[in-house]
Image (tube, rainbow, N blue to C red; front, side, top):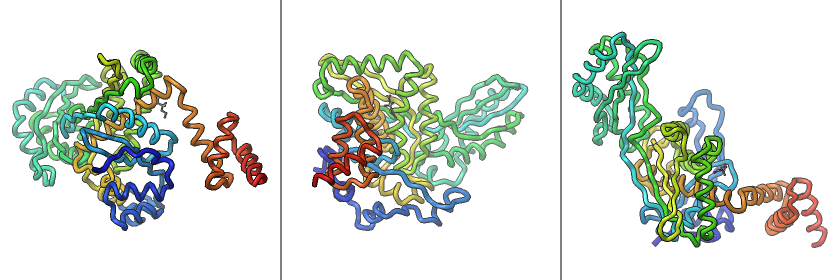
Length: 419
Ligand code: MEV
């Protein structure tokens, strides 16, 4: 049985780590080579993805370990520039697995497509849209798409009258996008049905676009963080107090949610997904309740900390940008997810692990120690320390509490003079 519980993964070299990940995910030699090579996206492919391409741009790809989600072990690829995020996620997952890991829930792949109808008579427009509901849905599902063939497409619609400079009727199409992120499909459906809606309402149809606030596409996760593994009753209480701070104060809540998105976005980028879409949806969802934390914590009868997360997650495992990006495809293979649903569930678990680990660090020793260690390591490397020298330079700088390029250089010179 393969396990993601890998102790000391961080102590290995990148080459050794890649070998372990390749074994875990059954990567071919070519796939391993592609991860090693620098130009991951061929220039001609990149040139077809966006406009005015001059090259590709890289970020570190790390692996968060220890994730047990719905009884399955996952190694989580994360693309991010910020130190400590991958370590924190692995740490949170390690503690969660003491009591069985994460359990998740997904509400389905329903996206909202919005059609804005500007009309002098919104009540009549509302009546006509509802009266023609079945025809609108049938029309929406006329478009040529593999999503429709797989059983997706428009399933229902809602209407709302919204006050603006002029009255507006907003038609929200509820569209099942299956394993796609769905933006292209939803936008095409909206554009396709818009003339019919204009005809039956007599109004002027303006915008036809998806909403990133996909409240029917929620991913949720829960974990029980064992009291002892968390650090005892006092730490559990401190984490609850830290959470209460975010609940009560919007300034803290922004940072609390940002920490969640550190993990969420890192997985989105690694898997070729639109991280801005999920970011926008998450914050808007939080704002629906007055901008509140995306996580919730309580203490159970055993004194353990129970954490929950709930956020909209519009992700795909198929679609243009994923298909075009070979690295995203390999990251999906490392994750071992087959569907958008499974990916969304994993992302929720990562968000919860990330938030728990951040709160635990903040409520105890603070997060600077971990950050400083990585910072010290990168300084040691940049002044030319090699192998064991790196650890020694880092250790001395941390001990002295003096972390700078000049001090790293001095320590390295002193070490070399001694040997
Ligand atoms: C840093 O990127 C994220 C944290 O600030 C999150 C938090 O404060 O909860 C550590």
